[in-house]
Amino acid sequence: AQSVTQLDSHVSVSEGTPVLLRCNYSSSYSPSLFWYVQHPNKGLQLLLKYTSAATLVKGINGFEAEFKKSETSFHLTKPSAHMSDAAEYFCVVTYNQAGTALIFGKGTTLSVSS
Amino acid sequence: EPEVTQTPSHQVTQMGQEVILRCVPISNHLYFYWYRQILGQKVEFLVSFYNNEISEKSEIFDDQFSVERPDGSNFTLKIRSTKLEDSAMYFCASSHIFGGDYNEQFFGPGTRLTVL
Image (cartoon, rainbow over all chains, first blue to last red; front, side, top):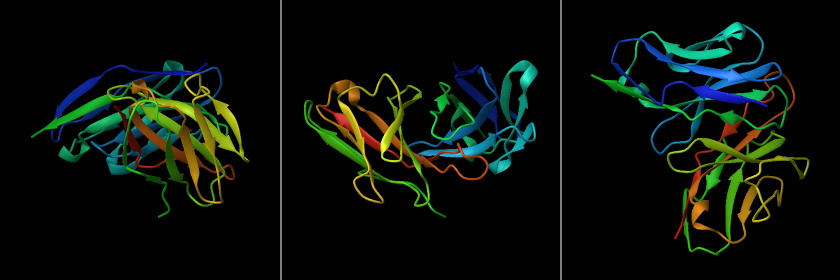
């Protein structure tokens, strides 16, 4: 069985400071891992994905994540937060097989203050 | 850039009524999905669909729910007799199976269903 734990339900940062959103996963097989972002009243947008290639994955808007198998983690980072980064972020795990369900974490709300 | 579209964006219905939520997946995709997100909760998988049949479904997807691909472009979710607890945002997604990253799913903007 697969599961995802997002360790923080809410993270607050100041504009220009680093962002760290934490995610741990559990999977019996080699997983695919994703981060999705959801802005208020919008759909889900893929930020980045890990599918067994490079362990450091770069995504859109300056975000990146590192797959650490030994720690079963896939934390999302950004060196410098922008006001527009304020949103809900979901860590997602799935089998690397077509048609299988995405398993979502509970989400982390990122607030950015000026 | 191709995208998944969903209609309507917001649907209000009375308890016990049937609703059909519509989706147009990306045209060369072969797998289709429905997810839902109850307000304040996480996104939950409902069902996946391939080659005109359900390939996987969750325990949420009971006999009240059905999916259909009535033509070459639309993918629908029907709820036969809506309950208050069906109120949620429903997301459609699609993916293709050829090439790498074949489980990357592309999401539509969602339909907010409100059951009164």
